[in-house]
Image 1 (cartoon, chains in turn cyan, purple):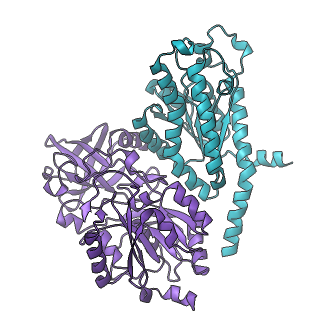
Image 2 (spheres, rainbow over the protein chains, first blue to last red; image 1 turned 90 degrees about the vertical axis):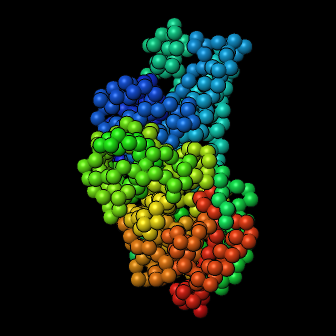
Image 3 (cartoon, helix red, strand yellow; image 1 turned 45 degrees about the vertical axis):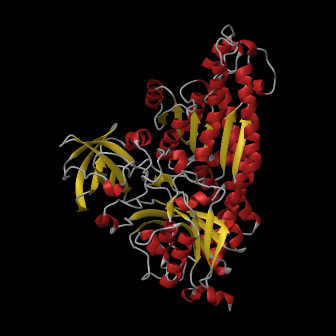
Amino acid sequence: MKKSQDLAREPLSGLRVAVTGGTSGLGLALVREFLNRGAQVAFVARRREGVERVVREHKGAHGVVGDVSKKEDIHPIAIQLMGALGGLDVLINNASDLGPTPLALLADTECEDLERALATNLLGPFRLTKALLGALASSAREGREAVVLNVSSDAAVNPYSRWGAYSASKAALHHLSRIWNAELADRGIHFLTLDPGDMDTPLHAAAVPDANPSELKSPETAAREFVKAIATTLSDRSPKAEHAVKEALYESS
Amino acid sequence: MKAASLPVQRPAQAKLLVVDHHGNIRHWARSKFAELLRPGDLIVANDAATLPASLSGQHLPSGRPIEVRLAGRRALALDAVREFSAVVFGAGDFRTRTEDRPLPPPLAAGDRLALGPLRAIVTELLNHPRLVRLEFDGSPEKIWEGLARHGHPIQYSYVAKPLALWDVWTPIAGMPVAFEPPSAGFALDWDILESMSGRGLEFATITHAASVSSTGDPELDALLPFDEPYRISELTALAISKARARGGRIIAIGTTVVRALEDAAEFDGSVRVGEGLATHRIGTNGRLHVVNAILSGTHEPGTSHYDLLRAFIDDTTLRRVDHELDARGYRTHEFGDSVYIERKANANTQEHAHRM
């Protein structure tokens, strides 16, 4: 019963969503899924041609050119996201760097490859979340609870040989998310750290070139699962917040 | 006072001069600011993030270099980024004191400006040869991108290091609409916000497009503060009414909050919901209807920020404050020490009514 009501209300309609790494793979699938669900979507990617292509092909999507692994790009990205959306309810840190390609044993991993993976997969999400935290908190104070979804991996938990740089960065991101959540969930900012599974994406192709795509999950399926998880997080919380707001407004009248 | 020259938002040793509502002065650690407040008080801060509002470029008719400092807009709407008021400087940058900066070439309506990737036209001179209204070319998206990628935070010569937005966004910064940081908010970190809830204090925000604090030109400075748009949400207005009803005080974090709340004040001390344009200069003439106390930076006499403090305390007390700030080595400007000033008792009829 509750489900059908939620569906009827379309809890994601009007939601202001930002996705990093939005021009391919899971990120692009998330952009599409959120647009289909009536959300306002802005995405970030490094290459202008890719950003312009996705904007052309997706009416209503706002594109931002920027590199989340660079500290000096963070505020220009944040400003443009806010300029496009006017506020923020959902941030998805999806942009990821695989580390060395082809994958390498840790002993053969260049320091620079590990640094790049950490800059993209850990420092980038930390910095962008920090820069946008005021916006997320502002939504939460107004009764619109906020979600930050950090895209994780089973490699964050399992020690797969040759996945060292990627795994270590995703393990750190996974734990970072849990600590953010412990510190901020009570203030209405919820952090999810989710593993999409092995998907048919450019990143997976770079990691496992001989994988059979038909045995991999489609990014569209993963995107639907993630969007559902976000909707559930918001609908678990929002009625409470909305109720509190309504009660407060009622009391004052 | 000496200038705080390092861009550190919360130095561990930051000082706080406290003036209570009897005019008594004492000295406090700014990190312990929340200890001065009482359960039931409402803290209101400005959650505007700061635009990189300094744009270097060229005045195309003369070919001469200029720096444009965006200083105002009429509304906060997302697409209201085409038109700004701006102060124009000649060659050079923040490393030269604004007072010593060369004048820009003579400006006239119709002049084209090239500001990095942005192109703009001067549409009007605003009662001063260096204060203009300008209009950017292109879509709002392109303008946001140009500002984000080309602009720098407005900066003054007392901080030698070029500022990044990391230095000037307050911990609660949300929508990027301020032209200079609402720097009283530097004092707040998430740890303080967390400790507030434990003390029975409430926290709310407004969004106020803080304008420039100084231009280096006495005639222009006399026009400060420029008009500033602000937005007050329904919940913030409600929090204010409820705090007053329970006898709690309204504590403004910074001059911009005072300006917005007093501009939106109704006769009964509640505030209007929605967007407004603050046009008044608050000072001795203006009675405060909403705000009971202010946390602010230390300001030098003659500035509009300083004048605003005169709405809280009489001139004799303010002179004692100046003396103490000098004698105790307080540091001034946005990265400096702070003052916390309660509105003087006899100006505070509302509060008395609740106590009786």
